[in-house]
Length: 329
Image (tube, rainbow, N blue to C red; front, side, top):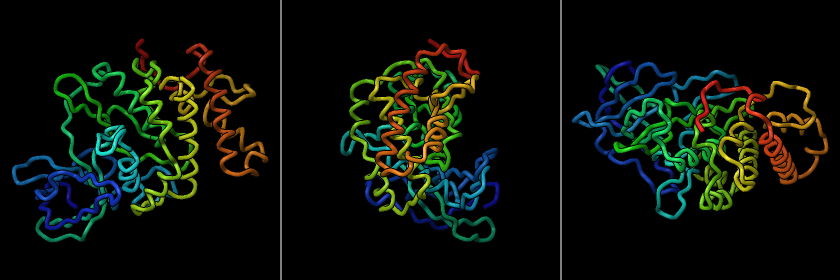
């Protein structure tokens, strides 16, 4: 596609078959306008009156900073994040408020017709400028965000992919999940670990929500919708969910869990692991940890994560390094 506004000649949308939530207004799409300055191809899908309807990301314009990833990797993860953002009750709002997202194909014309392009299509959400002032968001907003970021293993959570949909105050909407469900556990990135709201423990209903999550069912649901994360990403997804359970059910805060996932220690002489990298490296050095059933290995992850979280909580703040942002209490 050209770097300008193009006429959308034809399009097809594949809604997640087991979800039943659709991108609203797609029948009115007439134009596509490329957003400049993005690492990947991102297009605003508009109606006749220039009204914003959806955001389209073609797989042909996906870019990667690591080897081994194929085109479609990010589109799969954009849709997977929506599918697995389960509502707390049937027919209710998605827990993490990931906007409706599905696979789509579109054909454009700008003087001459192009080939069909496939990608992810997400409901457009108007953003009320929050000027990177996280205090506009409620504790509940940040806790919801932390749960989906840890659960999905977000490698790219920064201020630019957090929207505010509320004109009177704050209502946090997370977007851009193409870097979730990773193939490694050494590159998590959570901006919210520096926010004051991350210092509060999770309320009862969020603890119950985490208890209700079913990883096996999640992976089966993705496959029913044509998404195969790959064996390694599936295992890491299971590890992330064990970390989430250990943290939330253990009474730890988003900040506690976020540190465990993203920080490193000045001292490298600690015998016991204190981060997710340390836990997994430690298990790599224990042959018997991988000679047992996967479920037993994951229980060992849970055990070592709990131990690390408990120890980290006792450490003074300066023993950790990572984000340079000011933590507001």
